[in-house]
Length: 566
Image (cartoon, rainbow, N blue to C red):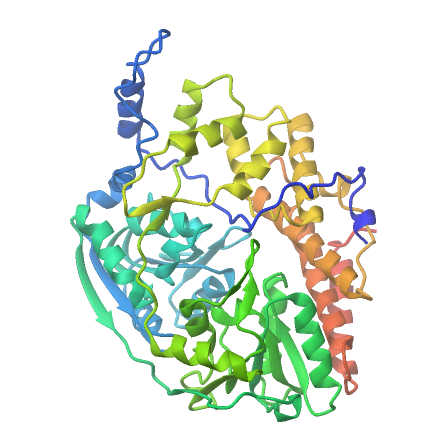
């Protein structure tokens, strides 16, 4: 399947190893004209004899000054903190609903979808804006966005940032920091773990904002079991077994289903969001045969799940660098998904498969999460552009490496993990592209650890640099999508979905140069359907002709509407 996807010879990228997948970042110019003029005035102190500068672009110790719109306000900041299933986000969203204008910023597309749906259902017009989609509603004064898409140039009455503890994430923390410092709103509501409170208070000391903290308790009890699951014969309806690899997920699914009592939905990170949502819907549906869930830590946020009991198959995971024990926040986030308030399970239970894992589970639930010490930071595109003018002979990769090496940060911040960006920069530097274009490709949602995904980015960049336009049919081979027959083919189809997702992301930023967004979106939908058909065929199943027929009907509609290649 992979060999038929790309027309050009495959370029191996195994030498480019990383731990994180880059997430999208909008190309807003975040310094106003006055700030840029100040920067240029500082640069005039440079001369050809390399006199020491009086304006240091690598000085990132005052990032709050990057956002003059927000600094013109004395924002009222409300911290809603507590465990999973405590109602903290609910209360923030009620305030958003009552505002005349507002924005919700979430860490996942699924959360943005959920909030947009909620507000529109309440007759509050709300746009949905993520890296890969725009659903604009006439007259809307509210937006539900992924945090990377937060617009720091707009004025709002109310803004909500969900999962604010992710400021400490080494790969995405800078996007949450940007939203925290940059959103211009009368009220800013921050939802998350109490571990973030001291850091947020310290960061906002210099902004003049007024800060109030509201603590929440869990709404339904969470009971750690004193005994392990033991045998899979003890699996019950409503159980969710958590593990940390695709291979293990499907192995557990097969083992449970082979006993003939339960069918399993699956949820993990590399599944398309649409597929994750439908798998969750089947699990939540009481009339569905899928009464058990096998999942990764992707269930930790973004999906409403009616889980009775969380069962950890292991308390260790490979994080891209080494095998390690789960952290206290990770354990709390996952375990807290059991016993959702208002579901058919009034209380939640959590246990492990193996006895030796119970002490870590119990101690993690008993103790608070470690306090966050610093937040992620990354320079704006404007700062990098001006810095590049000081080093005109350097490629983007070398310039970015030099900037990172020279950057000065205050103790409250750390430089975001740039490994993924540097990998992209290394291959993008081979093409005759301007700095803004290179920055854009480096910020795109590409997984450079996935050979097919990385190859897709390279081909998009090469065609764009040569022709100024990238037609999907020049890269994507028509008529090759089919239901996977093996785990390897499933992985390839997930990778193809990533390439199509990348094309859609680029089409929203380089619209004239990536004109086939509709076709790419339709093919993405096809990938999701084919993956679901694979999931339905895996394991023992009762006949579901009606469901398979529905999938066939959708495919026929895609073909009739001219959205599939022939």
